[in-house]
Image 1 (cartoon, rainbow, N blue to C red):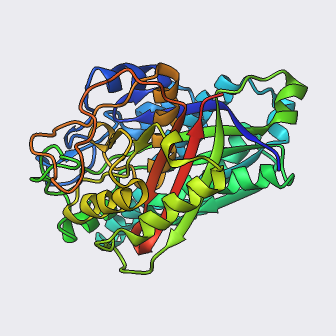
Image 2: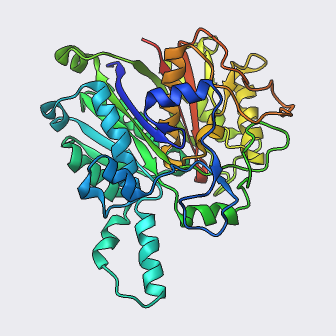
Length: 396
């Protein structure tokens, strides 16, 4: 089968815009988590990974007039997608042949919430705004704007969505269905998700503490990240440059609970094990694990148990980066895939923030930007409904 290479990446999150800013802040331990300022909620003291600009300001700064009335999802996606395309140095003709798999769970919920308020107030409603609600709308709008006229699809499997988009794009290239795919995801903060997670009682009102004994819950975030995937033939034909390789992936579902992980970490174990087997690597070749690490009481212990089942007493250096960006839901997998590529490029482990009392079941996560020989990174994304996915990203 063909190898799958990453030739371009783009990202936006609460840490900032672009790969360079993310790299600088990750290794200097700067978080993007802060009290709410943009989301129109009365719970202003809650900490979130929020991009501190309105949707209109974001659109206007890039002169994307066509996006002024679109959902925040589309505008955030455009930022990351434009950087990925520029990073890969794709021209118009190449974009025309490129497929696009977009991942999202929120869709145009911010626009739907406006309509909901208008209906409650018995105001007149622009029914065309309903068109932006569907998850497929953001992928359609982004694909049209950037001229991505190959295969298109939308994936929505909760927090594993964009990891699954990477997996699907890689499989299509391996099977010769496509030579080039752009994959990743986007989710913007909305009242629906914020209040939904509050109702589940898994939000930490302060800074989240992944893998800490005193962790209380997650910080929600927003953002987008995309990767340009290509076959070796495609890269050679256009004289492109590989940044990394997608060397393995796995997806599993333990069907344990609608929102909770099993104590043993069955879904996480199956996904990681599948990805490692798919890559053909040995366990001791995994140099760093970019953990799902949501900072919820159940997830961190469950993932820790799964890591012990896979690696025994020799768990590689690991950390969660959600204390930097917040949990970006459907975008989390691609955001953390880009961060994994940053770790490979810089040969540094991303520090795990806010750790004071590490959980005792496994060795503590990395707390410093330690220099390390990193060739293979295992990146985890575990979603509601038990949909668990892992991807292995390797140096080239």
